[in-house]
Image (cartoon, rainbow, N blue to C red; front, side, top):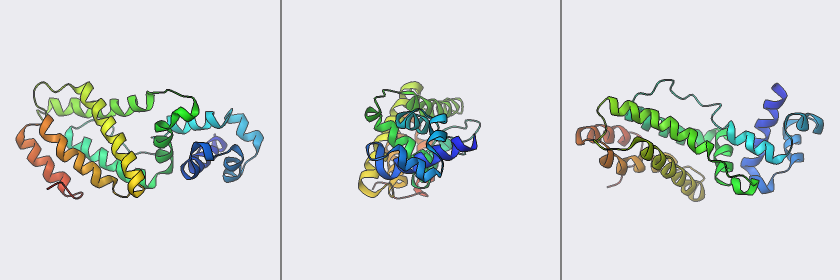
Length: 200
């Protein structure tokens, strides 16, 4: 499995540097320092490699084992923003998931994975009384994934994701009043204020 892991990580680096269309199996093999036979033993094609990078994008992450509510959800969102700047497997997986039409894929599972992660934190927030009555958790989790995806795409285009933590702070600054009671909003806005520039 070590060879497969080496190839997968080399592929993530190449996809991150060149995009899917600009990447080639030969570039990946050279980066991995392996052979064509080893490559095709583990992966059938460049498309198969890209799908593996998408599926395993979160494998290096240190996500909380137990949901703990809105503060933890915001912390996870900011952690992901930091990881997208440094973690090439996550960054390549997220980029390929957005651009998967080039792979001939229509795979919603990466977004469902993150929506489930966020929904678990929202369920914990509801149990803790941190959400307004009537907030639909499944729909809110989907909206949050969509907003996060859009934020990271905009950040990638504008600053190479350098301003992504600030964008996530702003996302939560505006989102909180629509989902949480005023005392929770005040507490969590103070929390996100520590991480970056909030709107005026």
